[in-house]
Length: 318
Image 1 (tube, rainbow, N blue to C red):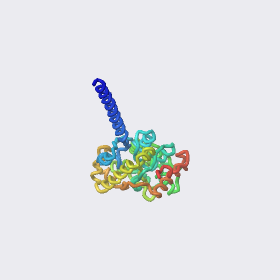
Image 2: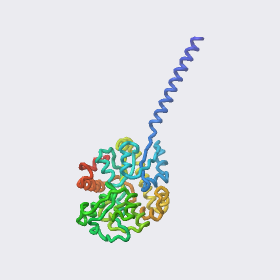
Image 3: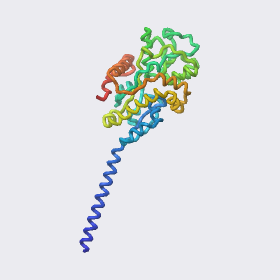
Image 4: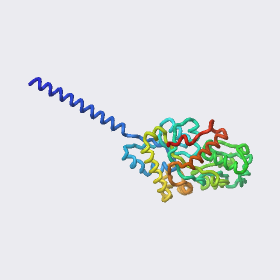
């Protein structure tokens, strides 16, 4: 009797231990299946609209994916975050990923919005005597180094038989450039939306040349290579939601402007102008888009802005 009681207790203890082990393994397994997607975003664009609407969280919840949003001041910092692993997905214009790739970043291009050449321009103060690109000779032109508009300036000057040596280039981030532009410390400013639209609305800036018929000005969505290769279904779900969001923005531009009013601090009329110049739709990169991005990289290499020639195709997941 005593022996059978001991055997019963022993079996119970073993069974209890086994059950606890199973529960622990089950808990670990469940924990491992939970994926956190850290998304880098800026104050303006499609990603902050997607964040405000909350549709991505609903979509990814079905896949057991948690979404965390991390704000960055600009594309270069966002892609640095991608490189060091603080985010796995983000958005930037044409130039930042080229510089990131040149620095041996592990980023990959996953999708893009259609070209939006009217969303960037070379502008001058409303009372400026400058009327054409030729008038820029010897003048001070502000721009953000290594940005989309760096390429725009190169192409605009080239189309008018001029080069960077014919002007005085002043490298300033947008906020500093706006201040210098207003006080007359620079003669012209090459800038993108929504800063471009704000300068038009708020201080009557005049457009000397936009990107139309000069550059493409694509917006790219990028991911950490390891994350994209390990979780292709998650990346595809994000791209799908981004595409649906651009459809919504195209049909509801007033509502989209209101969503961006608080994070950007800009008036609705400024944002409506800016949004109207976006490219709507988010799709995987085509051969044509890859070739155009290669042209930007080649131009930057020719200007010695990056240390070596790049192969954009190497940053595309096949």
